[in-house]
Image 1 (spheres, rainbow, N blue to C red):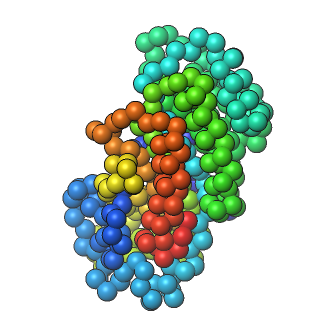
Image 2 (cartoon, rainbow, N blue to C red; image 1 turned 135 degrees about the vertical axis):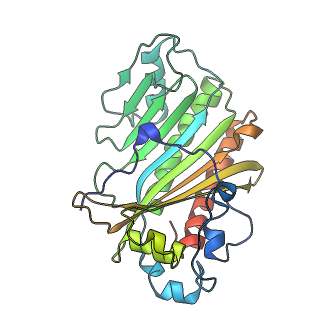
Length: 294
């Protein structure tokens, strides 16, 4: 079964804001958080139905098996002048042991062009790993071009090792200021009952208004601290359908990023600490919400 793409690399980090509380989540209301500080008022599932109770674990929740569709890490930069794109691309590829063995793309744009447009795009020959280098950010991706087959634990170490090599080049080779950073993980799980019905029953309770919906999305924004970092954490849960319109897949995205209103220059060690902590935080978030770890 091929999965419809919910979003692609160009639109990653859409919300750029969210995080989780330090205390353990106890109920569905906690699980979907403040919904952006009361953006929507729902009639939720009955209080007895909680994320991590025994009945949930013995029922549907223990059948969720999340596989990775996409991982994106972003280093936000003050500014970068692209004087020799070929040399820059070569240095990046050297840093990651020639990981990007596909054809590079380099764009010559007018100075007034939006800074978010990548000036350098690198990828491997299988289109699994890729990198976008813009004036004000660097994005490093892991992407499954077909149906996802790998768990987070099976790929996170290799992904993080390569990303931290890029970070080392940014901080020690180019000495670039990095005021903000982010990690986004997109995962899917097959679900026999259908993702739309799952979202209705587990998060919306008996609210009649949602019974005949074709697609549902729950977006939850929370603000907290991850160690020394004030962060946002977006948690997005969506109906996913294949080309035949069947909703046998649940899509979940977690977006962990440092808060823009509390920007500060981040050093190499601080960035490494953030990503190590964010990975574990993401796994705990899935476990507390679904009873099934990322």
